[in-house]
Length: 588
Image (tube, rainbow, N blue to C red; front, top):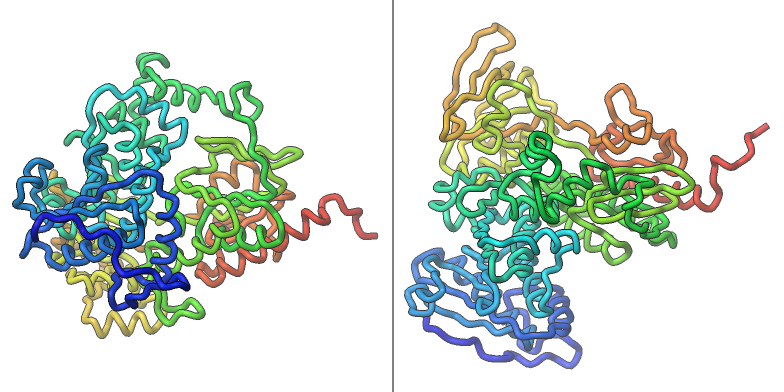
């Protein structure tokens, strides 16, 4: 491919806002084009996107990236796209050796994609372009204070896959840090499927994996402030707290130390002198899965100003489901796609804040919620905190978690193409993910401790038709391996007591869920015998003005029931705010 700027403009816009050239001349669908055209109209400064490709290397991704960038150029007058060959002098000057590679505003920032920015990473690219155009990083004031203390260079690599729901959030953290400190922070997003040699070199089998300065590693999606602290200090927050305990509270300096001391000393706790001024809402929803987002849609539509706080990525556990086949209205839909649609609708109505966990709650004349970034006051609280994957609790599980042991086939399955893994469990999730792995070219064996599956019949038939082996009446006693990661699982047959060892490269856990009830316990919400939040038919808890819905209340844990519970909770909130039941005179 010759070095060149793409031509400014393209097919003229039709008078009605459509595209005169027709859909066949565009890579992006019409609704995406319409949204991006409106978004790019607000760009302040020009942003250059430099794309590098080499014929014969990742050709399908080269083509997809080139078509995508050409569309962006036609949709935004302030976007300049330059196409280069990886073997060109310009590539050598930029230090580009892989195809495809994309640089964002390279004269101002050190931000690059090694691999095509497709899927959710395309959204991160668009956000980064808008921030670069505005000359902003998009970081919170707290994170900016921490990064202001950075005095030495940081080279950040985030390893991702297009099917990982948590990867875009971590890439956003890295890119925003590079926007904030352009002279010191270099940020790179590495698509592992297109760069498997890099993934193997860095043992990137659990995603997202972040590697800083070749030595410091972060696993998973980090809250923004934690990412900033660890980027500056090159130590985990847990290590920094341990240092403060051993050497004194002043042993960690700067804004990072100040924030850690505040967290340790409770300076932002309810009633503390340093607590931030509260932002007012009618309803706060903790959790942005299908239940929480539905509750927020209904409360806002009822005229109640609503804030949704999500500690991780919007979408909850549904993000980990490769395909959803039992949600009304969709014969088959990807979990990420479904939650994107629900989240987009929720954002049209209410405020949704990702990466901002509710850490502390105070129940008084109002409900107060404290997060790492602020303090919020509301008339009602909806707990939609979901659940977390159960662990087996056997030897080797913690040691090899992220090094062969995983709970997310959508996130990490790509790493085992052509290799052997076990899927542990016998419910819908286990069989769905086993089929997903099989379709990805992974050799998968299901390990189930019973003699029959609990999963829906069509999933059982799917496993049977796919020829996936099943080890019945078998449980994992130990995960075995070494410095290179997991190498085998030690098994025991529960029927006859015999033991064996199965050589594998990976193991995926799908054995159920534990409700996330930390916030509920904190304020005395009653739990049932299974550890789930106890609610009435209106999703009311035992504490007035506190409601709960979704997986955290147990029962039938399906997307459809979560949506129904979220709407029920919201309608109860509206009714109770208008006519508080706790203030009504008792009957009789």
